[in-house]
Image 1 (spheres, rainbow, N blue to C red):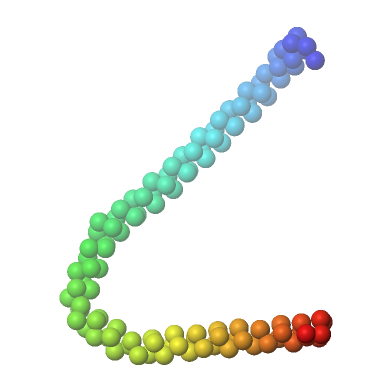
Image 2 (tube, helix red, strand yellow; image 1 turned 90 degrees about the vertical axis):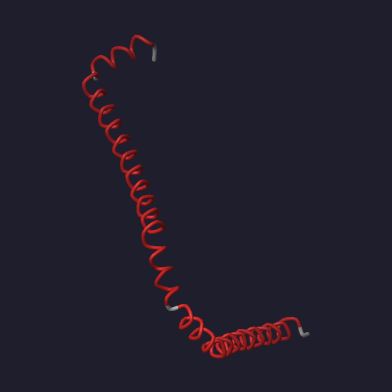
Length: 111
């Protein structure tokens, strides 16, 4: 296809080409604005939380500091027990799985 043919095709379809280009430009602008808006809103919310909310929460926690520490310290034995039980369960599962693998290997390979 030579330049003259391309020029004729473009001239015949000038209006349709222009509409498609305009539509693509509008789509690109809309996408860009949408992304920018989401980004700016997210940043504004994060700033608001860090500037307005976080300090207020810290103040209110500080008022109850001793009660919070006492409550956490009182729960340490329960937390330790829960961790211990969870670890025991994982170890038992691992050992059971190792046993199953060992039994399968014995049956397959005669070990």
